[in-house]
Length: 555
Image (cartoon, rainbow, N blue to C red; front, side, top):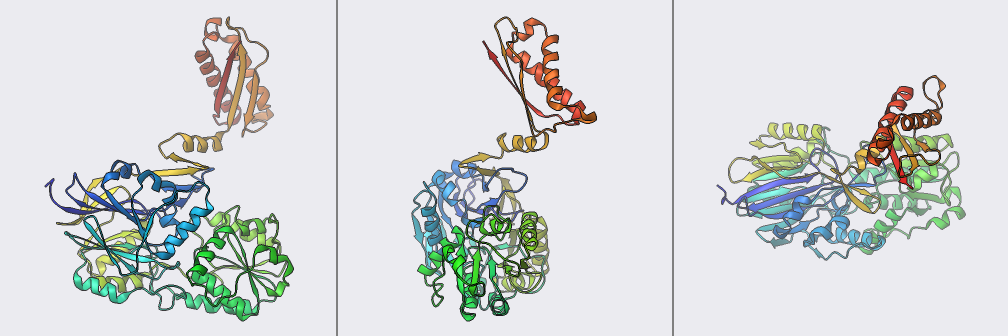
């Protein structure tokens, strides 16, 4: 069995969660598999990782297998699929394959980040078949909320697997190709062993509206507006940007773009002809000179990002952009789960200033780029896979997708999680192994493992604060001067109104007075005694035990 040629699927991110997508396909004997990576994305940190910017997949398994990795395929340019490439590719230096727009976005991002690696990318045409080690891959166009999205057909001697990536069915996506149903039906006729498929909207019935329908709504909104209209959307949604440009053009208004990420995507889209026929957009400097009824502003910050344009405008902290009562802000986006609080904070800040706010609760100003149940049913009808593996979703999405696949007659449905190795062929599809997985936190300029103490310690500090004690001792164990005490994140007064700074100072002095001189001459023993006494004393007065740092200087 050890020499059996198997094809396996092993996710290291994006299964049981939305974001941080990284899928692996392996082929060969169990102890000598060749690997193909699909996507290398990131996600945003939440309250569980205070101070952290981004979350990336832990690739220690891939670093150990580096010599066996044939390449990295990128399905499309969303950050949850490519956002970790610049940070993690230097650890692997594997060949990268993707299509033109995604390659352009990566290159533009590289130029915008100082010190980013120059990654050689092989640009693949849609429909082209490419031999990569024991794998033959084919990029198949699908509609999504960013141009140039592709599913990937992966062939080995063990059969054909379809990795859908992110997709939807849209007869008029405004920018980019429609989902290639003819090619998908042809794959179904060829015989698909397994489909590894997007689950994001598996809990929603019906079929997603078209991007063109949103464009019509946006045009009506701009035509009826009396004052400024501001749109915030995902910066990568070129179709939405085009629709906003068309709406402004129809109303004889200028589009002002505010936000570096939006500028970068627009630049690549114009270079590749995706905004042909749309007048050039204005820079932020033009905003203050345009009449209120001639402005359409395109802003970053749809997810409440604190330093993005819209957040700064809502808090009246933007150096060049301000809104007046009666202006309209349209959230042409959905709020990613976990971002509700910060988005609501932005909305509340706008409403307090008399700005009107419209979201997808008020009209068709946004559509998802992911398939609902009706679209999944069509995909399964075309492809007719023997095996279904739901991915790209939280557990509730995966479970609903699995139940749907079973109702549609799929013989084998496998629910897996990050770190599971699932055999696809030959034999029954099932979990056969586990591999190391986890998270890397991008903390400023460095990557920190989730196994490191950094983040747990930072979380703890957020709950209990710090006491810092410094004192000088001579070689005989005598205290030189008064101890220095500093409190951070601790109430000034405890139960009964006790002054916490005095309380800690008195505790340190009492501990020193009660220790034998021999123990005072031992810095480690002294430090431990003070730390234990201070934490206990603060707990009595406050009800919480702080982190306590004791610094002893021998003079």
